[in-house]
Length: 464
Image (cartoon, rainbow, N blue to C red; front, side, top):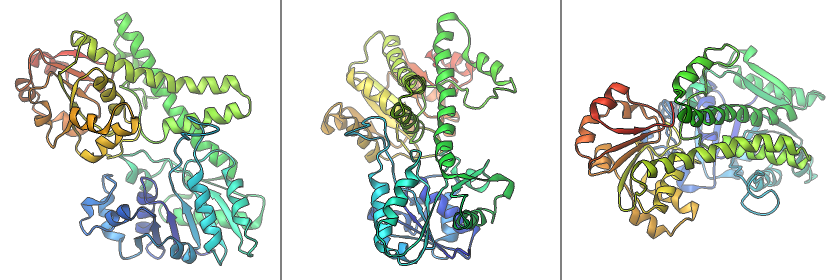
């Protein structure tokens, strides 16, 4: 089965980079990314590729190469669906904020709307691919919707979960650990559809790295992978608190256990807590699925990973207040880093949002600097929490364009994302322009102990 036209519904953090790399690696395949968000599509089509809506190292160069050749961004969803042989669904699946499963289950309304639109528009057979992170057996719901039209169009449903880490998404796409494709392995049509997608990835990924499974195993593998990774973060963060009480050094502990070949060093850096769009959402989804099947102990086990992460963020902020003589009211605190990690402008579930919210509740004055996050996004993140009015957030929070401006006359600095540029700052200059005594709160340990000692910061560190 030869694929000539690919459509991706959803121009976000998964759909945009994934389709850009596919277009680059498969120049004979037309790739169209569609979204109903006109502003976002306009940004993807910006002549200045440095201003595309998603920041990932290397992404703008790929878009510049492929856009207009075989990579297109459009709001004409129906046209792209009609022309496509293969359709990726890559829309948002946030945690539900209403009804049954509120706070845990994935909200699938956008997935269902996509399926209904595909069913309404399609006149020829399609391969439909789940790219969004979805609960197990969502493919069955997709098939029910797509087959309900009775217009004779045949669909093959595949699961192709993404395993991208934001900040390294382009490299993850170019050189993945594995590509996972789930489908109906019991029918010839299902196997042909899977092979068609295998052939797309095989344009640049060695075939031994492309795994094929049944669709249910593929769907669950994504949730399981994120759950295991998040579990490691919460585990080392739990130990960081014990280290502080006993006098142990969490960095020494993590290095010692990371050298165990059975454990390995990755995701063993204690910090202010994990963020991003996937870990919390996927674990909550896993908890909800377990409770649906009345697996109480399984649900409680995985929920504790989230509870530990929430505790770590609260603990970091509370220690800031305690260290600063139990009051931050009226004090200026500079937050360096708002995105949930370096090399991305994604702020979803960023620890910085919750630390700032806690400090604002204590009547601190917050000044934020992040290399890629806009002022509009910072206020939007705080407004979403609903802790105070939008006007109150704008009065208490200032967003600036320079770390030095953020730290001028500040009582404290909180480094909450490990951007490389923070390692190169003139920390003596920052210290000299701060109010004394000056405090540095660093969940990432970017500075060498000698630097901290020479500068004279009173220092509290949670982790790595």
